[in-house]
Length: 154
Image 1 (cartoon, rainbow, N blue to C red):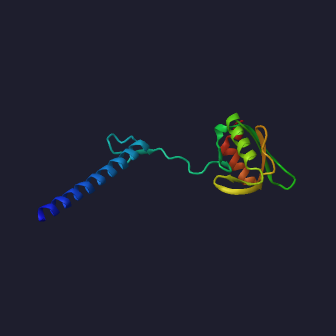
Image 2: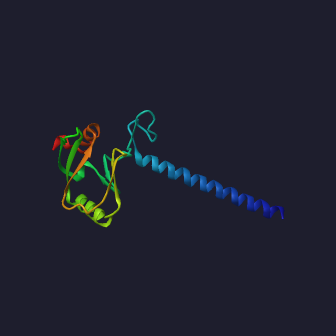
Image 3: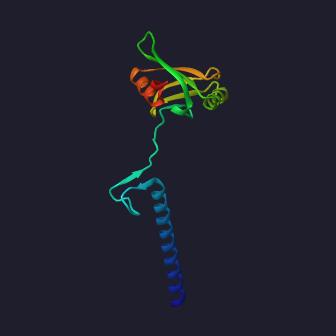
């Protein structure tokens, strides 16, 4: 009996050790995939450059993320209430995604987020047609959006 118990305990310890080792190898591989070493060795030391994705997109329309690559044109202008009107022209892929989503969501709401912050929630009366649309936001949000989407360069 005691030898059987020792064998079971030994097997459990080996299994726990193997799981711990595998987890540390996965963590190390993930780290090495994200960081470049400029320090002259396997470990970055004091000179790492790590790839970190931006957590919040510049513009999000419901589930659709709009980045600078999806914007092919746009302009800013002020309305009568001193708010900014941002007109965007989207690339065909992004425009098709927005059209499909709004057509499927008629009667629902569309949350408009600028840099992760909800700026407006609108009711969808009909699907957006074409590749152009206008968003009314505060001036500071419009300037941030224009900079992040590269509207100043268009």
